[in-house]
Length: 232
Ligand code: NAD
Image (cartoon, rainbow, N blue to C red; front, top):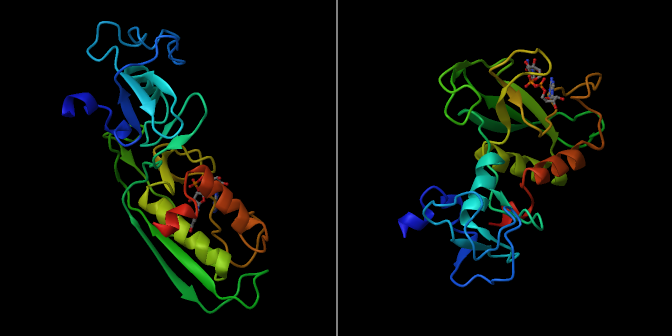
C-alpha cells in the first residue's frame, strides 16, 4: 500500500517485504535480531518491517536501511551494506541546462584521420533547489557555454552516448566550491572529466591523451553509467 512505501519509494523496485523473517539472523545495520524492532525506530510504525533486497537477498529492517539511505547517497540508488551490490540509477543535482553536440571536420592531436565531436553545455545562473548545498541561494556559472572535444571514432562515439546518459541523470555538473577559483555556490564539473581544449594539452584538459577515452569510461562506470545503459 502507499503507506508501506511512503518516504521510501526508492526501495519499491529493489526489495520485497519479508513476512516471516528468520529468528536466528541479525540486521547488520542495527545489530538487533530481524524479528525484533529496528534499532533506528523503536516505537515507530513499521519498526518490525523487514526488507529483503531482491538480487543479493540480504535482509535488513526497513527503518534501518531507510536511515542508511537518508544519511548517505540519497540519490536514487541503494547499495547493499553487506555485499555492496548497487540497485537503481544514481542521479545527481546538475542544474537545468542544455547539452548539444555536433561533428566538425578537424582532427584532435593524436587522433589524425578522425573527425571530432564537439559537445557544448549551456547552464545559466539561478536559484539553488532543495537538492543543492544552499537552497534558496543564488548559484553562479563560470565559463559557460563549456565546449568539449571527443575523437569521432568508435570508442569516442560510445563515450558521447554515455555522456548523454550522464547528462540526463544530472551527473555532469554539480553546485559547490570550484577548486580552481575557490568560488562557492557555483557550477563545477562533477567527477566525469571532459576535454575542454582541442589543440594542446599543457593543462591536462586537452589532446593528445591516448588514455582519455578509457579513463572517462571508468569515471562514467563509477557513476553507474555503463554500456548496459545503451541497449535499453
Ligand atoms: P573545479 O575547478 O572545481 O574542478 C572540478 C574538476 O574539473 C576537476 O576534476 C578538474 O580537474 C576539472 N577541471 C578543472 N579545470 C578544467 C578545465 N579547464 N577543463 C576541464 N576540466 C577541468 O571545476 P570548475 O570550477 O567547474 O572548472 C574549472 C575552471 O575551468 C573554472 O574556472 C571554469 O570557469 C573553467 N572553465 C572554463 C571554460 C571556458 O570555456 N571558458 C570551460 C571549462 C572550464
